[in-house]
Image (cartoon, rainbow over all chains, first blue to last red; front, side):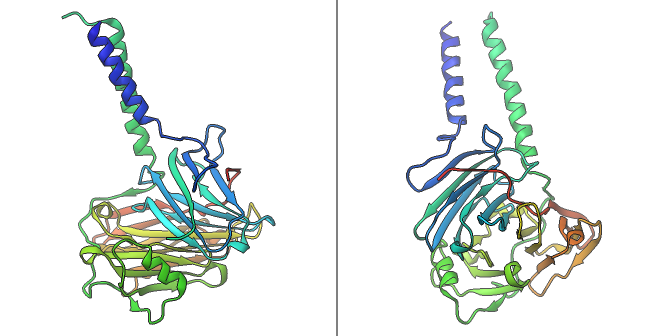
Length: 125
Length: 215
């Protein structure tokens, strides 16, 4: 019985470590999203809006051999995306013309397995 | 020694989950596969590219913000496309003389990524930018990249099924620009000089999908 308790404790620790910390949208601090994509509701992208120039973004994701998409969308419907491929899995970028698009974010393209992503807005490098 | 039935079930459950997780990691590659490395991310002349005489503010910030690149000269390997589809790839020297690559598109300037051990499994460094004037339409897509030393050719397959060998420039950089539906990129393959497939990657343009606004 004692061994069983120890084993249960070990399994509990492993499970706790395996669950990504903060696997939900964060409205505080600089991170605007940390969690899995797709989200539990099935959405594969998260957007953050109303940034002032210049906008610095850092995206990191896991597993590393996953394609990650940076997406910019304007209210009028025009859009641009940038796809990062392996071996990159930690990328920062400067948004060139923030006034061109209202919303920015990270996307896990349809058909791809779940990925854990950090999308971070900063004021400088 | 008699084992508790619950413990046996738990161990079995953990084993099943571990196997499932391993399968999940493999599937997470998302249609990209790469062969074993026999090449290197090196060039005879050291850091490749033409010197960039005057870096603008965005490019300077990119160098300043990339670890180990302070003071490194920026070189341009290739630029292609026009208007919103214009893209360029730059190189600079990182720690221990490692080549570092960065992408500049019309919408963003990326930080430099430096070659390390994790690059050994990748035959081509890739970036893709796509765009459209309405949510469900792709009007342009540009694929740009740099190939490892052992890559002999890079072939891109279009949405229309055409296969096009991309020109590997002096520094093993390549690009493909599409502005018509049938010409949109679907798959890119890197072959060794002997014709072996080193890497095959899905490069279907990524459209914005339904998103959650989180900030």
